[in-house]
Image 1 (cartoon, rainbow, N blue to C red):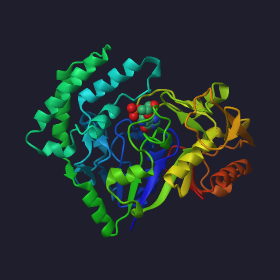
Image 2: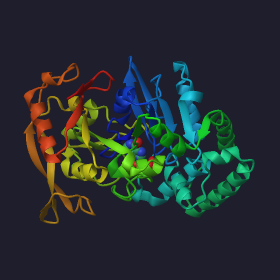
Image 3: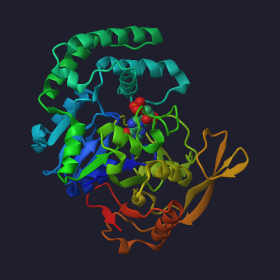
Image 4: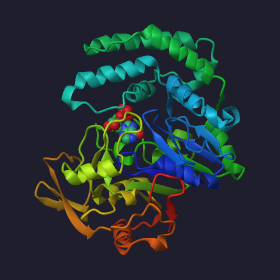
Length: 423
Ligand code: IMP
């Protein structure tokens, strides 16, 4: 048995939560492998909308076990709020949700450091969600972090104090105005840790490898998107983890030869929240229409998302880095009725036509080269079968499949679980 991966191929917000929820019925275990509460995975069914932050998107299915892997960073305060939001659904967390002892903990002072770091950057700020992600991963790689397994040790609060004191000194070093009441934040944090400790902490790499030996199926759920990857994304405007396929191996402890399918999710257009280059961004009425119809506001921060045409140069790059085997196209319904559709198939890079993503994609170096395709006018949201697709949509899909050389297996035509068409 093997592990399948599900990854976002753009700058996040592709609709991973919805697809994990749709696919969960096929898997015994859903496992998150990186990121933290900077993610907002949105699921809609039975007329209710749910936004999950750290908890895997399989939590609503009776059968599946949900694992938070060692590569994830957990903020106990946000986590407990997330659990409370799910209380009405009678989910048995103690048996359905398990956490790696090796996952790192986001401390209140990590959030403050995030705020201080962003404030100190002025115009060059990353546009972070300010959830403490960067500082927590810095402590992880700097070998200073506190892990979930530490909560089982007697002296963890001593370790906490030392690290929090160091963080306070670092905050003052930034010399920016960050107002906080650490005592209040800590009271909330320690109360949340107490609740968190009621859940199962495990050696998740052992658990997952044993599950594979027992013939169980695992879906690894990515967060953010490939262009936010710490190594392969649009650095420094990225998040602090490996959002690409390799992150699933290091974030769960499963070997590369256990990976089977790699599902890549992309929107039929492109969005980005936060700062950083975005070659196909639209600053006109068309971009505003995409944002309005697509309800493009961040699930975590509520910030408006920047919108633009589909960028095939960037998408090909993401497919290559991840080894995508199947594609899923989201939000095709949003484009219904546009005059025409532009797809970026190459860049003019300093006067030269190129078809790969170069080191520097700042706007002064790049002009997108577009191919125009006719758009469909039909409302896709009520369609239930690919045979109902208008010709222009089929042409759009064929064009993308030919360019990317990977089949598009799912087309999503609305936010609800039921608005998912298999091809
Ligand atoms: P951080 O990971 O919160 O520090 O944010 C770093 C960058 O990644 C910012 O541009 C964020 O807007 C972006 N980002 C982080 N998480 C998400 C996500 O789940 N969806 C989309 N963008 C994200």
